[in-house]
Image (tube, rainbow, N blue to C red):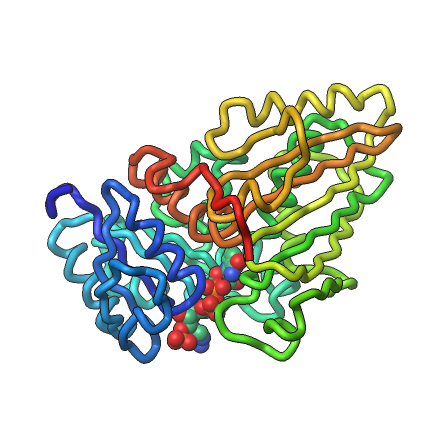
Amino acid sequence: VSDRDSIPLVLFGASGLLGGEVIRLLEFHPALVLHAAATREGGALAASHPHLATLRAVAGTFAAAEAAVLRLAREGRRVAIAYALPHGESAPRWKALREALAEHASRVYVADLAADYRLADVAAHRRVYGAEHADAAGLEEFVYGLPELGREPLREARRVAVAGCFATAMQLAVLPAARRGLLDPSRPIALAGVTGSSGSGAKPLPGTHHPHRAGNLYAYSLTGHRHEAELEQSLSRHGAAHGAIHFVPHSGPFVRGIHLTAFLPLAAESQGEAAREAYAADYAAEPFVEVLESGLPDLRRVAGSNRVCLTAAPRGSLLTVCLTLDNVVKGGAGQALQCLNLMLGCDEAAGLPRCGLGVNG
Ligand SMILES: NC(=O)c1ccc[n+]([C@@H]2O[C@H](COP(=O)([O-])OP(=O)(O)OC[C@H]3O[C@@H](n4cnc5c(N)ncnc54)[C@H](OP(=O)(O)O)[C@@H]3O)[C@@H](O)[C@H]2O)c1
């Protein structure tokens, strides 16, 4: 693409795991081009991402990246921003930048990969994240980013709150049956998910780094996980009656991927086949979601790709849905690009691999 046709992307949190994945995926994108990459300290990104062989960029500061956004927007260019920062960091930064942009803010397309703008209700945000929202006035501009469950609003949007990784898996596993009224609201929706170590970001913590995780498997957050609120919000938006949500996440001894099992209570045993068909119908035309006709979803099929594999199997009054996706791609950086593609009028699949790596760490 020529400079005129390209769309510059400014990345905040470029040294992180998702930041690196955004840069990797941009390599294959026909229009979006990495224009500036920011970390708190600046410095050579190759140190954080030695696998990005073509990366020459030296990261700048957040202030330099914000200045670049202001300059480009004031010149009349469309600009994309990706915030790949810890929760709570993007909202105050975007609020200040939006105010500085003033009337030029409409040329800026923002993808927040953190949870700052995912819950539209400030009371829900306070309950789940334990703090007042830093940019309550900015919330209403954000569209929730999970294209398979709401593509049209993204085509008109300038801001997207990219769905969480477990939250993406849960919603894709539950919504087809739930929004058709096939679930029994008097019984709980039970879900168990196993995530790889990349879900915890680039910096090792005592409970999440290699010696603790390798060859190990353990549950956490037994009293509730934040991503349950995204499923709750989505069920409510689709008018789906449902029982209590019980999600138990686990840490698995691999790097990329989520394996989710949903145990969905059917309203009637006779609806098993209708429920199974709901998944095939909803995802038949989806470029990235595949209902398997044979075999079962595993991580090998999805690691490194934006693909989701699932299977739905009725048995008595229970529908079991198994689903796999790569948390770094479809659960994060890939989904952000998929949303930006829709927002910018690009091909939705631009830059996004459907093929997995075939192996996983
Ligand atoms: N990992 C996943 O599978 C996944 C999936 C979906 C969504 N997410 C969400 O995406 C966001 C990024 O995740 P990640 O896994 O890429 O995390 P990460 O590897 O820990 O990267 C975080 C980035 O933010 C920067 N940073 C850290 N503390 C900061 C602070 N106080 N202020 C400003 N910048 C700070 C870090 O850079 P420096 O420390 O070098 O400054 C780094 O570039 C998180 O909100 C996460 O919840 C992650």
